[in-house]
Length: 131
Image (cartoon, rainbow, N blue to C red; front, top):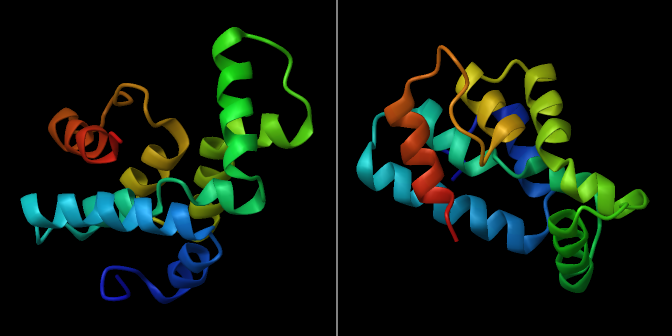
């Protein structure tokens, strides 16, 4: 894992809850198996949920946030931040100077690829991220 990350990204990765670290590592491992020399792709998979690191929320809280979002109900404070973890993470990664794919996938997943992004690489990320 540390071999894939830049020094400033390592602390961001470790700031996540253990479940998010594990998920990011599993996602990155899938991508590394498919495309071992594409470090930008692997970093995008490893760091895509780092925006959740600013929200300390239990598994039950994550479930509640997801259900509120699916139902289109108002989401108070921490639940809203959990829902918005993509933009939070994308902003943090952009501030560190991460590559465009790393920033965009954190920011926009699981949405379709933004214009100008390699659709095949984006699809690899979506498949690897699929729980």
